[in-house]
Image 1: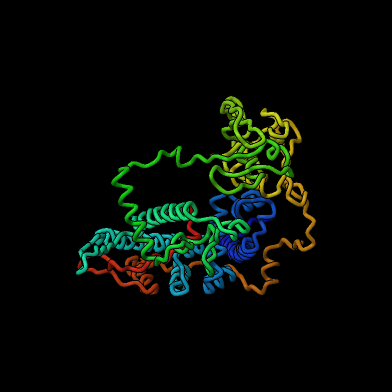
Image 2: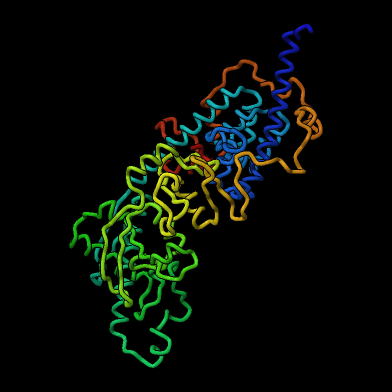
Length: 488
């Protein structure tokens, strides 16, 4: 059989490429729908990208890109239509969707149709650099304008006015919230200690929050009920004074990382051993904790045995031990090398899980341990997923409905398409694709990159570069890059 001519070979390549572009568009539409409906979550998978990595053999970085592009196309009708017709490649679409908006997609599409993928990448790269420069200028401008002014009013009151950068202002707000919470708890304790018992208290307990104010953990401290009649602003003022007093009294030293991260849980041995047992499971000086959460934390944590009498008074306190000794931890890391849950790629910050919990008689041995990331460790305990040992180094995971999570499940879907001929499928979708469909219209003319970037800025409603100063205005608008879909 004679080989095709070079022209015929070239036409076959370009035509098939356009068919692949159109098919890729349909693939991304399916991915967007699958992600929107969270189809990946039924298998205990962390995200749609992880599902693509597991089920479709797509690298995790490439999978994240596909999910990002798929969700972006939902808001870009012109780029989506060109992609559907096979006129632009996935590479061009991937680049355009990093900066595309409904206002500038027509211009980006014009560059994509008349230029190469390299042209589009260069334009997007330089556009993002300009955005970054403008953002830095805006941030520097805000930082340079930080200030605290104060003066005394005619009645002697101190008036304070502050202008802080966004991130430093957030620190001050968090400190103000912490001080306000401390004041609130101090006032409540004082009120409870000084309150005289009454018949109503004896029947119904201490008085509840004021009428019309729901007091719970979600209610901000300044909106919670107190017996003092104070405005919210007055409570914030008291919190500010407490912040100053605390700093002058204790200095600027902070707690160590260990003190910040340590939590203490009190849980009865019966609760650890039996999911249905009644007993104590609560944070120290805090609310109750789900028994399964306590079991998850106890899989690999410092454990202190405490024997108490019938009134709850401690009789004996044992030594602090770790449920998984360091030697077994090393062997576990060497064997599992990361989370063993199907489809998970986590290798760091994993936890040891007892397949049969040690509180129920399970051994702290390599055969009874498996490494899980925090996400899947929580699924196995609180999420209803199961795991059992099926061999020396094999573990079988199950969904809450009992179905086994198989790496390659049987294809029993009646909706699966039997027609895999990409050209026939495209024609069935009404696409008229030939060897010229996706070929760039570039005639060799050099692209004026500065003009192209400036045109994009104009489409987005941004001001032009000040050619005299070489800077963009300090009030340059925020980046139009879709940060929620940013590549990782």
